[in-house]
Image (cartoon, rainbow, N blue to C red; front, side, top):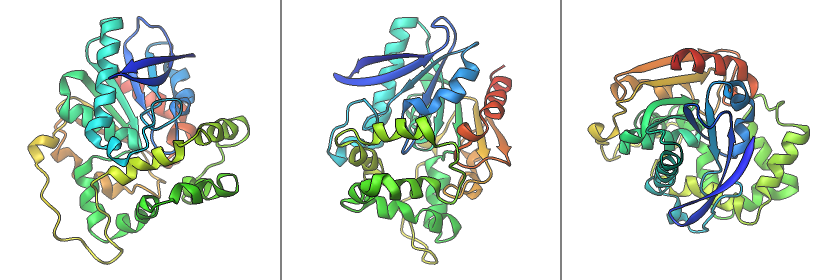
Amino acid sequence: MTSQFISLNGQQFHTLSWGNPGAPILLMLHGFPEYSGAWEELATRLADRYHIIAPDQRGFGQSWAPPEVGEYTTSKLVGDMAALIAALDTQYACGPVTVIGHDWGAAVGYGLAMFAPKLVNRLIILNGVHPAPFQREMARGGAQSEASQYILFLRQSGSEDRLAANDFALLLKLFSANMDLSWLAGDRLTAYKVEWSRPGRLKSMINWYRASPLQVAAPGQPLTNLPALARDKLMVHCPHLLIWGLGDTALLPASYEGLSDYVPDLTVKTIPEADHWLCHQCPDAVADLIRTWLA
């Protein structure tokens, strides 16, 4: 594993990498509340065949973390990773890359595939959501709306202070969401707390939620006045693999129903014994699915 810093659009970003620099690139994008090191279990299982690049995304880990909410709009987050792919192409002449995204990293992955399609040759999403089906489900006032109420809490002013109190007790409870968090212990938990403790980082991580335009209905109270999303602008034209841990309590399977309307070349694989944290719980199964699909 190699750690390095790179300047993107004039700002410093931290990346980790595994594998042979001459091999095809997999760009791995983490979600909340993780960081580049969250990919280690999966990356080490793919490093014999691929060159894995995992950045700390804006506001996370050791990367640039501006304090303003307006610095975390989708266009800016996607712009960071578009700049990283361009830098990788300059260094390795790699052309478009395969993007793998989990949780919030999926939002950036979808953004790249939709708005910068020449940069992405394949898209792999692990328990992450396309904005159109997800907004539909969060607006219905049903099960996904109920499961997404934590977003409204995170958007509150000062939520980062409540999450950090008592050695991150509430953050760990939120992280679990009644799912298996046994993998986050010992040295790994210590490493996560180091990243969460960096000055201003917890606030900037949560600013991803505050900057998002997605709306969450109260349970039983559907939102009926949402603006229509332009389907033609949200299409993913590259081959797309979705891997889903069925035990996820934060993102429910209904949140990807209808995804094929936006992705003509879609493959869906499920892992019944995993939940939202499938990369940590079943890294061998996830790696095998990725290898087989890419081959």
